[in-house]
Length: 105
Length: 410
Figure 1 (cartoon, rainbow over the protein chains, first blue to last red):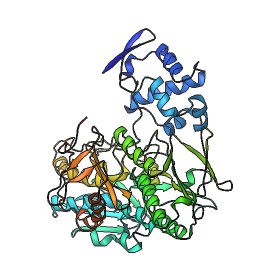
Figure 2: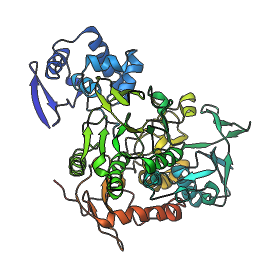
Figure 3: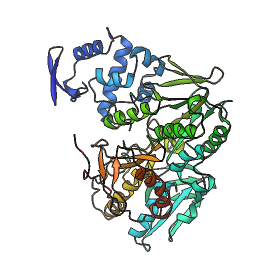
Figure 4: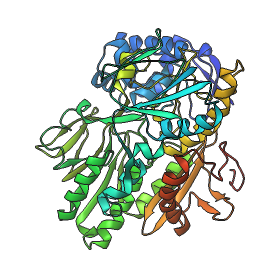
């Protein structure tokens, strides 16, 4: 397993750049990863989604699907696509320090 | 007398009833199945119907033909499940009590969940081959079709048989070639996935195959709505794909009654332990086949391997033993690639499909992730195996757990 330093902290990542230990995540890391995903600044709505996703993953043991995020946050799928353009499920999971979403078998 | 109740007499329900009737003492256990439909569908056969390879009679048989002696099949709708009281209410007014419940109600398509899909154009310029009626209607449309843009779109994953949309496109390439109008047909695959398939290596190899056949992939396409008047589908990020004929794989969900009983996730699939199929909520409820949320392919082969491991586990469990984590996510799928050829993929939770040879005494080896004629015959032979061996819970010469024998590791 590779490691890399994000926002001054060394964390373990897989070969697709997803963090493998959610406990190593910090808000500063999220801000950095968001920039890598083409999101220059995280708004309140971004944080609402990230916070929900981390809580949900903590309970379910896996990254939430888009459907789960919309049900849990009250935001629409359209909103998710404008906040996290192209592949929001994957981007949310990466920025929130969670594993790559499974469920697309 | 202990009561085992199985909801759904499709592929998984029928197989597990046959398997457990052999393994559980008839003096101690009653086995009852409930299903609202008297007809058993050979679902893998739907793929071939639009192209005239299979007809109605190839894919349907009465469910009763596959029920083992010593089980009861009740043909009724399931109105409600009460997991706390351990009872199920049927549409005919009866209430069934159970000691153990196996949910095998499968997955079904829901075109009404995507705006524009199942309205006036449904069955005309918008089709599906994911159910019996849809496959027959598409066969009818294809017969008179003069060519144009044919778009296949997967609405959302997971879907039953994740390779079927690819097979459909490759068979379409062959079919229109044979009809002499391939040059008038554009084939496009709009998928929510980043590539042709879910697993990296298979995605690359299958993607290459699609390219060779002139099939264009529109990746990461999450459909928001269909616009039947303008004949286009629109994604959430406002990309548009125009079509003359749209073949949709609509949203797949578990049975609504599962959700109403509090047994389902967001898509009405039952959350289970992925190695044992025990419900996360109730110690006397299991879910097998497409009905569970196990992150394995929703496919008949997976249900078969699952039942193979489940039988002995269930017997041990009801006698007070522990469930062992026996199921490894094993899937084994023939993929039709057209022109009388096919591929075979064999994988599980941890190992993605790898190239190599799949050894099968007497018949094989079959080529893995590589086209061959043997794989095409394997696929057609599978229909005979399904009706005559698989459903009846007979042993197949295939190990339930995936083996790395013959596979080329990277």
